[in-house]
Length: 178
Image (cartoon, rainbow, N blue to C red; front, side, top):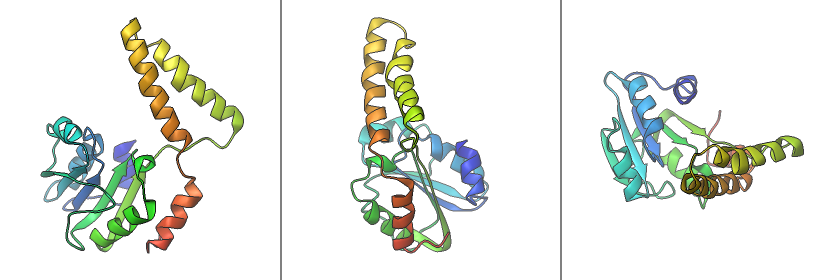
């Protein structure tokens, strides 16, 4: 699904790509395969630990930094992506203005994210799945406790994520047209 989303957003051979909040590099890996030959991927993350984890992924460069203050020149990239980290951004408007700034004319941005389900029934089912079912199948007692904590945190960030309408409004305010 990562690869398909990037391809549908227009990522192709020869493009210069920035992957914001690269984490373990899963989105960067798919981007690297789509922008080859001739393109390159820069992975950016605020966490030194995550950059270490992604160091085995095919990024041309790994940079420690925040999406709200990108350490790159104007119009440096043809494509900017972010996978499942939007809900961790403190200032959505600043992030999107920075993405717009570093994009070349006619550049594209693609943000993948999970949002809170609108239906109360789906919301309850998803919450139970993530906070109870996933930890129950995690294995031994220590693994279950760790999975319970991790999935609890993950669910809280999804539950508190800004609405798709808010995100689209911020995109428009930052100057994006599609």
